[in-house]
Amino acid sequence: MPTTATKLTLEYWKDADWYVGQLREMPGVISQGATLKELEENIQDAYQLMIKEHPAQPPAGEPKPN
Image 1 (cartoon, one colour):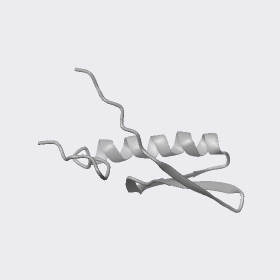
Image 2 (tube, rainbow, N blue to C red):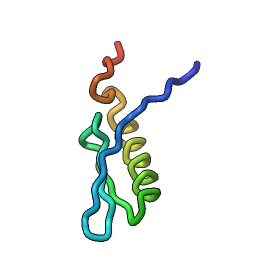
Image 3 (cartoon, rainbow, N blue to C red):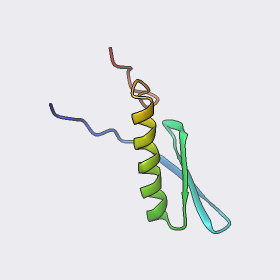
């Protein structure tokens, strides 16, 4: 069964020495990193944990599965 990629928007800002970010479509997915690359890796991990823990929670704007 093929899977479809979901495009999500990473909003980020600098807080002292850290890059902090959240996914616009899933406000509960928040992380930080010392670099933008580290933030991207950490936010992907946080997203994977979120969908593993709450599989019925699609990103905002996407229909819920039947």
